[in-house]
Length: 216
Ligand code: E4P
Image 1 (cartoon, rainbow, N blue to C red):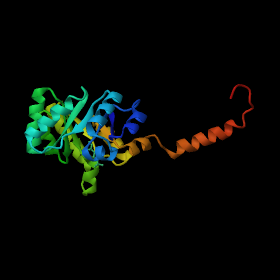
Image 2 (tube, rainbow, N blue to C red; image 1 turned 120 degrees about the vertical axis):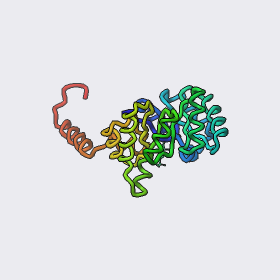
Image 3 (cartoon, protein in one colour; image 1 turned 30 degrees about the horizontal axis):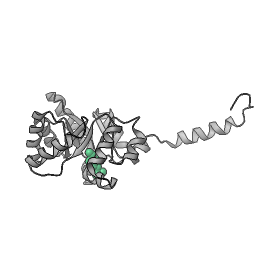
Image 4 (cartoon, rainbow, N blue to C red; image 1 turned 90 degrees about the vertical axis):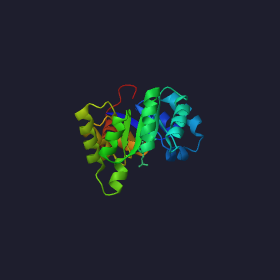
């Protein structure tokens, strides 16, 4: 499974550039980064060569296509995030014809993902954390989407988004999702286990008891 970093903060991307396969941003994350959108995107695309998702804010087809064309000019690895609406999916079809890749975002159900795939979306992003927050089961929505895509051999790839904790990443990988996009804090937690820390502490303590013979 590929791992994307869900952030617009360049310093977080730099720290994990050696590990991640791509980046996703959204207007909230761009606001948190506190930098002009296009300037930040340009820098991110210089650091990461995998797909970098950038979201349109227009709500009508024409506006979305216009914004998408402008964003796509920033770098070859830009993927345009389009919200799952009727206007959005019309824009996805237009962008497909123009050779611009899309990531359909704000997906909360399997039928939404099916429509996005039929319109030629390159990626769909089901928001598992927000589904869970509303009392649903985000990962069962992902399972349905993956099954539907397999049934009809849709090439659309599933990005498990709105990831809240390492359990979501494990569930995504267990289901065979193509990608999980994870916040910086969750990515840090993927490395951690208390027994690893305890093991290192014990090994280092024991190492102190070894008679010195070499350079360390
Ligand atoms: C990614 O594409 C989404 O924009 C992001 O994962 C949303 O996460 P949130 O629900 O934590 O805002």
